[in-house]
Length: 308
Image (tube, rainbow, N blue to C red; front, top):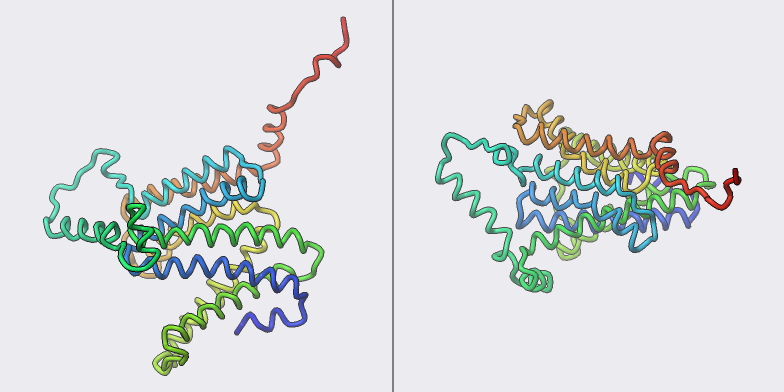
């Protein structure tokens, strides 16, 4: 609703471009929501971070974009950092540090939770059948829609921001259209789940819930997408994907600050690795670094050199 006034009077081509980008984002959100029904949030976040690898590869093979080795290295480093931060890779085990005692019940619970996201989850439906054929969990397969959906949204936003560079307010229009598309798709999903009727939202008419809805709807969605569009005026989709991989770092820091959540060794080490990847990707775009790459790739025409 907040985004609708922002598209009034704007060009239809720009609005449709934003709606397309919003549909790609919706695919990522739907995949995420469905995957979280059967796999842990840490595993889902790790699969989502594959965006840093998917974006440069899709750009190379589907859109003919240049694949810079340093961007690929940054993507792999960021992916490793997310793995450490989310507990998929144990820093203590890598360093040979083992806990003094481990409760059998805790270990059994962890094994059971891990097994639930593998072959046992691949059951009914075409997605389940495909997951069973591939030997992976249904939730794992659904979660792969995140890097594809979010990754394609980065690439299409970058494309349209450049395409409509002469159109006034193009970034704001595209961002607002994205939010409208996501909102309409979400409403359609709710209507489908409730057989065409809206559920009772009476319990949400309390000031603290309304504030939470306003914050997540306006600040963390509309404003965040708008700044994403601003960044993609100069940054590439690959750079945006690498920065996107740092989301768990900021979530951990704000969780420690606002919710008093405790940070462990994996959080510090994984967060540091991700930030190093972001810095490496940023350094690759500096004029001095680009110039040095061009200098090392300079070819001298021997035939044109003067004879002594």
